[in-house]
Structure formats: structure tokens, C-alpha cells
Image (cartoon, rainbow, N blue to C red; front, side):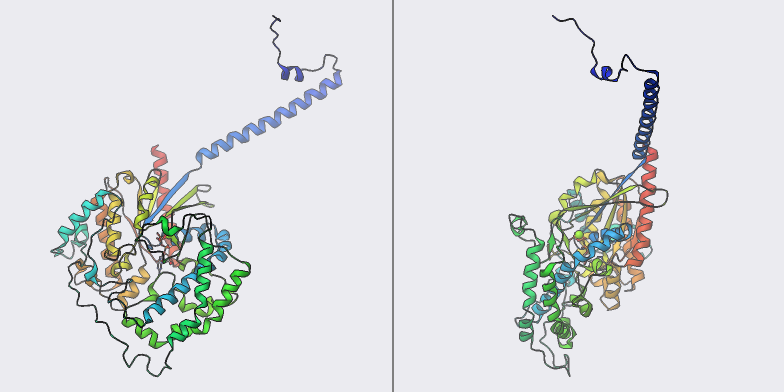
Length: 509
Ligand SMILES: Nc1nc2c(ncn2[C@@H]2O[C@H](COP(=O)(O)OP(=O)(O)OP(=O)(O)O)[C@@H](O)[C@H]2O)c(=O)[nH]1
Ligand SMILES: [Mg+2]
């Protein structure tokens, strides 16, 4: 057996040669000292980097709310404010979505003009009578329980004391027993409609607008990637409408190229007919009578025809915020705060799909979240849910809010409430739509914006107070998240609220 030799090849290689001259030795020592200095500098920078990483906080914000409540629009506002260059560069990708939104509005109008009598209650808006509440609207059993309680107590509509209404969340009652009669009987076009206007040959017009169908088919095929197999329609519950467009997370609308220019050319060629259709008083009168309020639908661009149909059309910031693209799945947006005390803090904003069949995907994100921005579109008091026409959208939002407030996993999470779509609410109230016809507990309060927003604030705040497992502060904002000016200020306040809470938790840890 050979004797054990303590041999370190590295040490052997580093060892100075036995016959080293004094000059060579001095040179070697100088080199070694220099190398040590470099190494120390590297060590120090690694140490500082570790320290910085420790200090660097990651703030997680989850956007929740029913479908079309404005979650993705809020996310786009964050992107517009915090990563403006990337946002600007992305605008081009939204042209295809806006083209599709425009074509969808045209379909809605043409369908409403079709000679066959449509059903007495068009799907977009309901009379109060149709709000029979049959389905579970939350994502856990608790919401069901609270809803039943809510229903039982709502029936006689107490609310006798005008000063006390805000303190009891259960007094928010919807008009499910309203006997209707308010729905105007179906009328055929009256002689006064569009008097003085040349008759509009709708069939001929629809024929000339047919190329838009090809643009639509082309864009849809392009937006839903070919790898999407099996087709989306097979993977979704059968009762889910596919009439809205959506893309899977990660997939983004293609842009540029000859095909897209060709699509824009087709739209440009249809511009006069589009203007004739939307500009016709006769058409407007039929839409009014049939209670099709296409201008209140998401992604409505017919008022901007001249700009949108231009050959060189490029979406503006406002267009991107107004465009409608339904979220399917989850997307995360990261950005870093560049100024202030929290410089370098990383924000991660998670946007989820809000339709009922997607809500079970929310729960895994409850685990590690610092704050939730919950969007309740309060303008939706007269609309049914897309997924279930028997359910009132506002009521669905209220029940969802109850579920979020009462969820134990979220007990220590800050909730920020956006009572959203205030601009639409204001327009509806000003047009004479009576809130109390749909929200019975609203009673005989003034049908104006100030009273209505105060009313909803009170109700949502009371729900939070009563249903939260532990006391938490109420942060409520009346928002129109498509509005650039007002939203910038609100998001700055939200940032401060979330950062304060984040700092508090770090100190407690
Ligand atoms: N007028 C107006 N439109 C809004 C407002 N908030 C959102 N919208 C529009 O409403 C539509 C729906 O908004 P989204 O942000 O896509 O809704 P979402 O909550 O992400 O919906 P899902 O992805 O289906 O869950 C878009 O066309 C928005 O431009 C608002 O405050 N006022
Ligand atoms: Mg969305």
C-alpha cells in the first residue's frame, strides 16, 4: 500500500518556485496583494447586494371583482403610470382588440334592427323584475349563508331611519319582488322616428358591412393561438358565452404586418356606412325602443369613428383603457418604485378573470398578498350577469365583497374598495333611470350621484365592518378607472396605503 501523501494540487501550483529570485518574489507579492484587494472589493459588493436584497420589499397586490368590473383596466393604469415607455410601446397591439370591439358594436346594432321581434327583455339590461336570485355568487359557502340572511332580512326593507341606513349592511335590498310593469311593451317603429331622414336600407347596409365579418374571423383566429388545443369552446362550461373575446395569459394580440394593414383598410372602406348606421336617427330610435344601449357596453368606439377608421389609426392611451379584452386565467405585472422612501420596492400586481367559473382560481393567491383592490362597478345596478341573466350584477358584487371581507385567509390583508364606473352611474342617473327601482332599499333618496355614491359607500363599509374576522380600516374610493386624471391620484393614495401597511408588517415581523 503506498504511503499516504498530503497532496493539495492547488497549493502545489500556488507555491513559489524554489529558485525564485528577489525581483521575481517582489513582483509576485505585489500581484498577490493586488489580487487580494480585488477579491475584498468583490466580497464587499456581494455583502452590500445581499443587504440590499434583504431590504428590498416585494409588495403583492391582488385585483378582485366580478367580470367587467375594471380589474384589467386598473392594471393598465398602473402600467401607464409606472412603466410608461413599455405601455406606449404596447399600444400598437391594442389596435386589433379595438377593431374587434368596434365590429362587436356593429353586430349588436344590426341584431337589434333585425326584423324578427326580439325577446321582450334584451340581455344587456333587465327590468328589476328579472332579478330572481338563484345562484351562489361567492366562492365559498359563507357567501351563501350570508346571502340567505341578507335575503330574509331584505324582504320588508326596514331602513326607517335615514341616519341609520349605513350601519346595517343587510338593508341593501334588491327589487326581486318588484312586479315590473315598468317594462314598456314592445313597439314597432313609430312614424316619428327619424322624421325627415332618408330611409335607411338596413339589408343593403348590412350586406356592405359584411367584410367586417371576415376581419372579425381573421382577428379571432389570430388572437386565440393555434396551439390552443382543444378549442376554447370545448374547455369552457357550456353556459359561458364566447361572444366576448379573450386571449390566454401570455398570448398577446399580434400587430403590424400586411394583414393588419389590410384589416384597417377594410374598416376604412366601411367608414361611410358605419357613420350612416350610427348617425341615423331612425336607428337610434329603434335602439331606444328596444332598449339596446350599445353606447354603455364595454369597448364602445362608435363615437370615435372618424379616428378609429383612419388608415393610419394608432390607439391612444384612452383607447387602450377603454378597450375590452376579457381576462382568462391570471396575469402578473411587476414594476419597481423609482422614487420616494420605497425606492427599489418591487410591486407585483395580480389580475385575475372575474367570471364565476374563474373565481375558484383566486384562492391560491390569498396566501401571500399584502393588499386587495376590490372593484365593484356600481353602475351595474340595472344589468344582469353575463354568466347568468337571472342575477343582478350589483348584487353579485355585494355578495362577492361579503365573501372577501369574511374570508379568514384574508383577515390581515388590507382591502381597498373601488366603487367603480361612477361616470356611467352618473350618466344613468342623469338620464332619469331610477336607482330605487332596482335597489329597493335606496328608498326615496335623491336620484343623484352624490347621494347614490354616499349610499353605496355606507353599505359596502358596513359590510366590511360586520363581516371582517378582525377589525380593519375602510378604504373606499369612488372611481372611474378609465379616467386618466382622477385615477392617477387615486392610485397614488392606494400606493401609500399599501406601503404604510407593508412597513407596519415589516416592523412587526
Ligand atoms: N366608462 C367606464 N368604463 C370602464 C370603467 N372601468 C372599466 N371600464 C371598461 O369596462 C370594460 C371592462 O373592464 P375590464 O378591466 O376589462 O374588466 P375586468 O374586471 O378585467 O373583467 P374580466 O377580465 O372579465 O374579469 C373595459 O372596456 C373598460 O374600459 C369605468 O370606470 N368607466
Ligand atoms: Mg380582466
